Length: 181
Image (cartoon, rainbow, N blue to C red; front, top):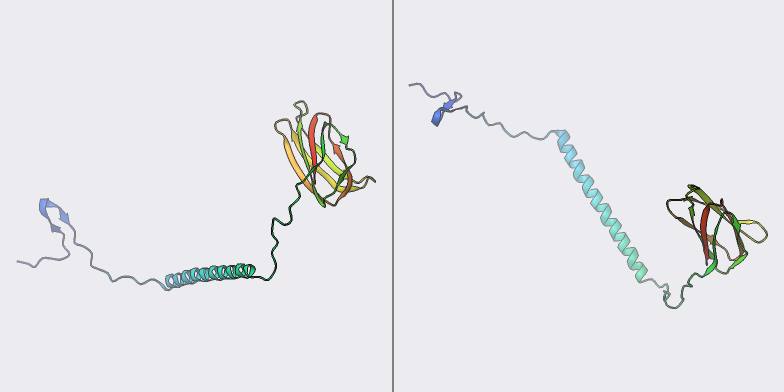
């Protein structure tokens, strides 16, 4: 009898022929490029972690310095913040010039809203702030108005004094303006 051929298919139960398994190969080593990329990725991750740690320590140290600083702190209850008062309220349609009004705060706000009538569709209002001698203190602020919604915006002005407003638009636009400060 001949010795069995290890490379020949073998027959198992029920007549199924199973080919022999291929011979085992030694494991492949990663290429130089793969090892280099792996080393680069690890170095990059470690570098990012080190940067985050440095930033965290720096921020924590800065916060601690602020807590132990010799600079005196101001108690929030010692100086009440003034509540803005309404200085002027206007409502109208079409162009208009307000009466002169006085603002006593260094910072104040002009809030404006508008809505166009259905027959106008869409238009705009322009709001300008003038001093009593007619000189501009604030260049033109423009707000687009539509009949589908009320548009709103505001501007912050600086400097106390006497002023008046000019509203530029057409007759089919309804607007509201409030000056607080």
